[in-house]
Amino acid sequence: MPIPRTARRLVTLALGGLVGGMLVSCGAHEEKRACPSGLKGEALVLVVPVHRGSPAPTISTDLECSVTQALERSVPISVVTAEGSPRVAVHALKVPDDAVNDVVKKDNLTRKAAQLVSSVKRLKATSDGNDLLASLSKAADEGRNLMADRKGAAQIISLDNGLTDRGAVAMTQAGMTSANPEDAVRHLKNLRMLPPASGMNVTFQGLGYGVPPQPELTSAQRNTVTAIWTAVAKAAGATVEAVPQPYSDVGGPETAHETGIVAASTPTPIDLSTPFRLDDASPLGFVADEVHFRDPRAASALLDDLAGRLKARPQTAVTISGTTSNGPTRWPSLAALGGARAQLVADELVRRGVTNSLRVVGAGYLAKPPVVDPATAAMNRGITLTFR
Image (cartoon, rainbow, N blue to C red):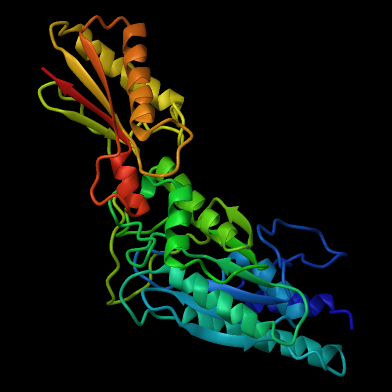
């Protein structure tokens, strides 16, 4: 039975009046508006953050289109919270598909839309912290439950910022926001902790974006957070989309539960009187297993500054050591890779007119124990300059 336009308007109004009474155009005969994700499954599971440092739970304008499509098609919708101990807060909400006429269909749509909006807005954290990995696993399990008697695939839309403070992917751990996504995937595979999302469609929105007390991260950190979570979902067998913007501009939720803060990267001041460490989060971060700067423009600016300081003190001798993670490499050894990166830094300084004595060392991997998590690997990946 076709869904009348009046019903769509009422669904829109029930979903919070988010477009100022304008029609959400998910139908074929209406003027289209942006729908960042859209419905891509026969069951929909929303992962909604309720923890401190994330926007308060809401059905945002971007999400509204997907939800409306699900309600119109009688697709079941569940909601999983993103927090330290995630839970299924809404299970299998859908509009009955046995309406006898348009009036009943309209009433059903409006009632279920209002029920979903109310349920989401009332969500509260029941545990400290944020563990998106656990939330994705619970959402995948819920998606499989919803699809038990349906054909097709489930869709997960995660609205969490991915700034986790616990679990196997804890972004609060020093070095994690500069970790190699491949290291994170390898770590989870070793732990057998990839979410059971094979065959599902996973959409992320808002990765890397927080609200106070979570400080704003650098664009490089947000990019890494996004790359890690998308790599995890892909490794789990899902089809993945990431929408690079916050899902909502509302403030954080009211909660007494604590969530750890992910520190924003800050520039390390250059001081020629003490050893100077530039880890993988610095402007001298390298492409994984390569001798190329990840951000050539930022690297050039730092090298210009360093070269200027060294030219003002030509008697200062410099030792440049390159360290690496302990991941797989196509190089003869990790020491060879670290040495090649250190040599690149030395060559760039010479190219800028530095005449100081420059000694290059390929240190390879130094952290103990040898098998580590991706954050520790990232912390060991970098360049150290020693002055004398």
